[in-house]
Length: 121
Image (tube, one colour):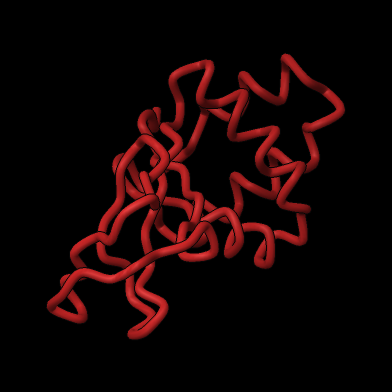
């Protein structure tokens, strides 16, 4: 499956074209499709694109309706993700953790940024 939505970003921002192509190869190689999440840290490590440059591409894609920014909450005790949402988490109070079976405190270090693929042509 081709991800032609990235062509728009490459045409609008020629300076990003090489990194856009690396991202396209990552998406294709991972077999990602509409609704799948791309973890920005994993994508950066896999593509050798800095997180800042990837964030720039994804943020442009969010504006174009290609991606949705998501926030994933990870249990620091068990290491798995417990939930995701498209707004930052309110970490001012304990949150129920499905992995632990109880409420506990989370910090900003337990939040991972990801982008959901909304459009694949």
